Image 1 (cartoon, rainbow, N blue to C red):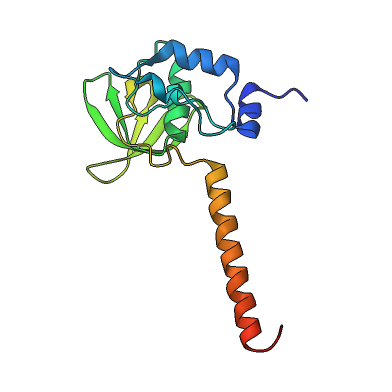
Image 2: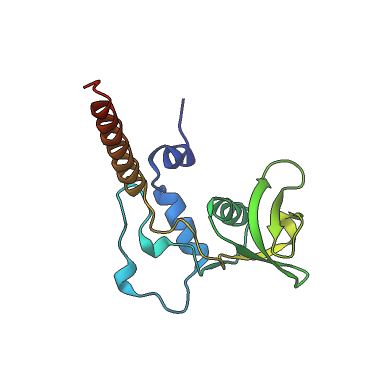
Length: 166
């Protein structure tokens, strides 16, 4: 069975060369990007220069739009969707249906409720909100959990000793 680049990316956490190239082709960098941020916080994360916060996608093909929606779906902050009608909607993208006769995305707008938007109506997607998980690596989470487990084990041991069980 042949694995797609997306399958490999999901398994390893590293974008394929094709996906990185596509992102670079359609990504508009923010006005200022300090060079010292071009580092990665771990080997399993994309480099800082591919951070999405503050960037805007202006897709010119359906494939680029689908990729932009996928990245927005994986983003942990608010996005701004500019529609072909000129309307701008700020909210959190929580679902998308990329297949079928009329692909759509669903988001929770800041104004409340839920909004469903057809891909065909999307002119651009800006990653306008703070990425709440930026810089928080899996390794940092594991280290924190291991520390919590060790502390709990020490408390349990001290409690057992106090009761005379050890």
